[in-house]
Image (cartoon, rainbow, N blue to C red; front, top):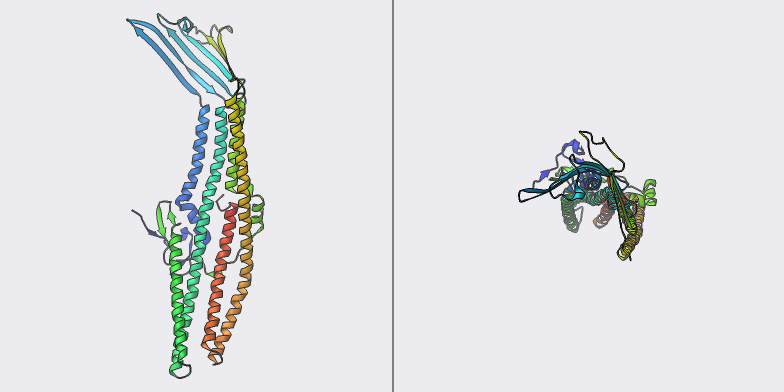
Length: 466
């Protein structure tokens, strides 16, 4: 059953009290909560665990191995043979495998080559590949790829965070814009209602024409419609913002009605700083998606080296020193002339399979490199476009800040003229509508400016926590 828990007014949650009835949820506090508690955030951290588990699995190929092999045959009340061989094998990074063990075989019909005499035989030896597998083999290739995969999981984690914080940030600034727009609509409705009452009173005493009450009433109705539309947008924006509010990735939260964003005059416009431009210059190293492509190419390079190694002939050498123990001592009576050895050689005549596999490996690298170049070009363009948008909105805000002040002066002057009987209600409404539009436009540009900064960081891949 879905639990809906209201976002309580708690200081540890990053909400700062404005007064007894309202709390401020800042952009930084909001992103911090999303980063800590959203299910996708918790899922992102699982990527790191996945990389560690994969690396542990690859390292397991180099674990020492204990083995024991027992084979017996009984027939017509006779033990035909009893073959027992146990020991330890230790693989190493350099392709050399050490082994040691003990064998004891007996029986009426035991194959003479398996004869170990009374106390059995101790053996210790080494095997290695001097042809294919000398410089790299499948185990070493898998371990190298696992180490690279561990790095790629970090990039994958950053990608999830980058997408999550970007979407959450966009929702926040839409919430900010809708809330501050509602404040403007509320203020405009209050002023219009007061004017309507004043005009209505003036018409009763003959100071104002009766037609002005109709126009004033229409303005009240228009302001009420605008307020209702603004409140609907705010409710929807609040509902969307609540989607990103969770407790430990399990319990969904809702934004309490007492919680609000900053007022527009508490938020300063942002611009592209030097650090942002440096990230643009080093986008190949900072963007997690481009890094993941580079890690993929590194893994393909390891595959290519292994394919190149497979073109070489197989030449495996094996040597085992053996000794029959005397008493309880395994090395007593050891003789250098007691040993077993072997050599294994094989090589395909045409090498068509191996050469084809190598060619495919090279083609995969070329394809991945082309993908990287295309992705880098696209990401660089988006980042540059976002930075340009950021600079443009900052410039527009500087202009519009002055425009709002000018419209405010025009409205004040028109109101004074109207009160003195030197202007009309139509002109006051016109000035007031212009002032409201400029205020709304300023808030829209302010939200757009911060969204552009968010988009720039997203395009550069630096929204994820480091």
